[in-house]
Length: 191
Image (cartoon, rainbow, N blue to C red):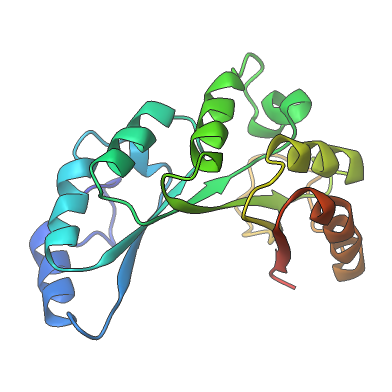
């Protein structure tokens, strides 16, 4: 199976047996990660899912616009959920890569905004990484987008960094008011 080896992995045979058995009961499959677009066998994997008649949702961080474009062109993805980590000015800090090249994110944004596949953008809002100005600037980057979700941060207990925490529900509501004017539909998740 595509993914990182681990104790909970199932084989391709087990996965496809499961999907085959549930044809007509399940509508779709969400391919998530890590970053699925890192895997060279992803197109073949999606093609196998597609042959079973399932819709396919792809979660991505937007760092591989050429791969995203190719999968959509092949008709292997029905819906894309792209993480928008921050505004361009704060992206490197947010992702923890000092010389991060935002242009790859910009290419993915432009591709999705052009409308070849249904999509959403989403930002997990974290105290210590975001504020109203950063979220407004992120929303400006996707101006006119169909959907933008602000997701409330949940500490899994496995954080690499320190000083990160969630905003209150009322603060999240205020952030929603900040981004809503720039996109067609904006909503909150996790509150």
